[in-house]
Length: 124
Image 1 (cartoon, rainbow, N blue to C red):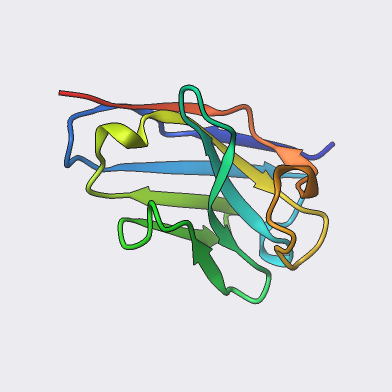
Image 2 (cartoon, rainbow, N blue to C red):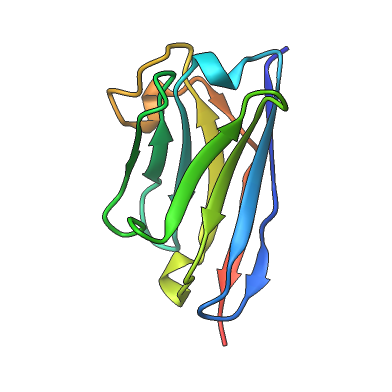
C-alpha cells in the first residue's frame, strides 16, 4: 500500500518560515518524481516545486528563491522548506508522487499518489 503522509503545516506571521514533510511508505522517493502542490482559496491546484529522480528541481515563479524542495533518501521523506512567507502563500499544501522518475507533464493528473494535505496559514 503506497501512502504519502504530509505534515508540518501551521499558522505563521508574514516573513516566517515553515518546513513541510512528506513521509512515504510502499514507495521510494529517490527513484520517482516528487512534487508539492498547493491550492489557494478560489484558485486551482498548482504545482510549485518538483524534484526528479535525477535530482533536478524546478519551481513555480511565485515561490522561486523562497521555497526549496529536497528529500532524505535514507528516511524516504520529501521536504519543502518555505521561507519569507507572505499571506499569498496561504493554502492547502499537498505532496505528490508519480510512478515514474521524470516530472513532465507537470499536471495533477500525472501524479498517482497524494498526501492528505496540510494547511499553511500566513497572517498578521
